[in-house]
Length: 120
Image (cartoon, rainbow, N blue to C red; front, top):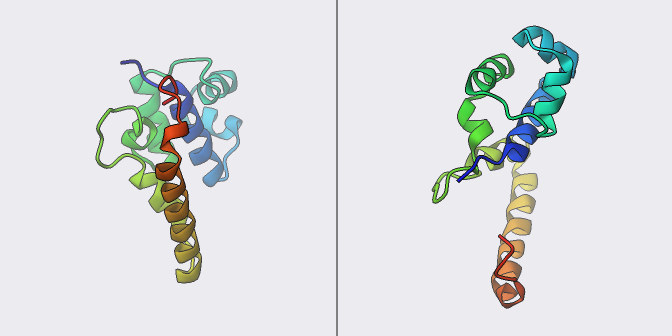
């Protein structure tokens, strides 16, 4: 199994933006070039573990957050993403998000027959 660097890059970018940082800001904080940060975010470059740790420390997230979704059979997969999604939402907004997710899951299960085996 290989790591999905697209997921990792998206999470780096999302975390950076949530912290109100530009690529230049992050690059300066972690002592890397702006182009290197850009290539990590677009998965053109495979970030080293050391780089991910430095980036995670600056952005206030865990390396696990970046890697989430890469491990097969992970019972906690996307729980952090979902928690961050509803963070700051009112009870009403949380309920609406829940209802949408529930309806989506139901639709996916009902239409599973349409899923091609080569798509996961």
